[in-house]
Image (tube, rainbow, N blue to C red; front, side, top):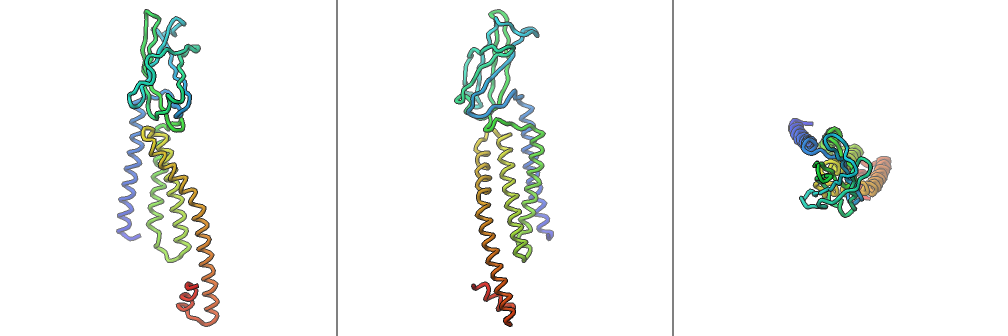
Length: 256
């Protein structure tokens, strides 16, 4: 790798590192701003629950608790709807229609026995798969993503540097696999962290599935090309045996 290529590679490495660090930092800030009580899967039935205490003691059966739930667009899903007491918990069951919106939902709980009362606010998250990664997992994903992208860039920088067809074909396949891994990691990061941008995860999921499915016809094509090149080499060796020069043998074999 010459000095110009080294400088370009260093700049690309720095740019990728900044992007990955920024992504992980954003996840860490998000976790600090909002404490998520639980995570639910999009468009499924979900139970929202809260406890009730009065001066440090659990509320008795005379207390009623109602919930108001606000979606990520600040639209009210339910407004002061009475919940059901289930042991020490007060529960309200949401339908799949009420959990169709991805993002952070705010729940305002109000409990009273007609004399004393208490309020609390908590949050839950709706994601495509019901999973939200924490900042530690985000750091691991970010480091792995950085390493894979750097290897992918390095592989591209080496493509065409050799006159050997087999080496170049190997580099193409390695680059293809690394790119597919990038699609997979970004897809999972998008689903786990960027729930408010659902189309991003969906886009990379489509890219991953498409590139995975395309691997089979690509493999067939490569096998076909290798067979043709093998036939050309056999023809060339036969022409050598008949006294043809290397230039003439190469020209005739490629003309087949």
